[in-house]
Image 1: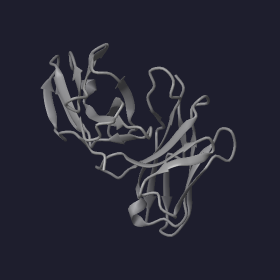
Image 2: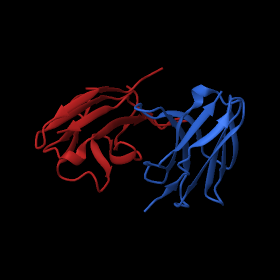
Image 3: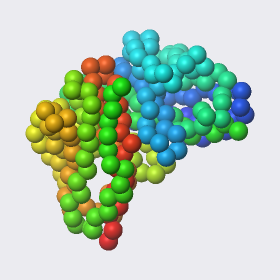
Length: 114
Length: 110
């Protein structure tokens, strides 16, 4: 079964530092997403990406966040100056939008800002 | 603001029983509906997708959709302890972005 792969699984960073979270979506998928889930809360949409550009972003996705697809496989989320409240699980998801589709999530990166 | 509402639970059922999980949504233009299972500390795992009114069955799972009532449900037959998890309802509108509910915690006790 095709998988979405995320690295690292856990990242601890100091407040104010930059972090890059990495994702390898399913190879024939064209739509990519970042979501986050603060402990005990719901899964929240951050940004969607299609055709090498952002298609939608939420209010959470402010200027400290950016996404890139630097090559044909990787999809990254950068947080420029981390805050304590950025501590959460970050999930990458992809979607092929064909047939009986659904959104496939990666295993997530647990980001802890100290 | 697009809202997806779920009872947080926990819903506790005995092993072998039917578990019924419910979800309502606010965006009448929503087109696609998904149920995910999430174990503690893990990522959401897709169980079912449903797009048209009525029932859709896959093994022990049945999704039911009523767009007029803006209601989608998931039935789990012959519930097993391994089904104990949080079940997330996700609703996709015209922007192709799923909005998630807070999830319902299901406990299946032996």
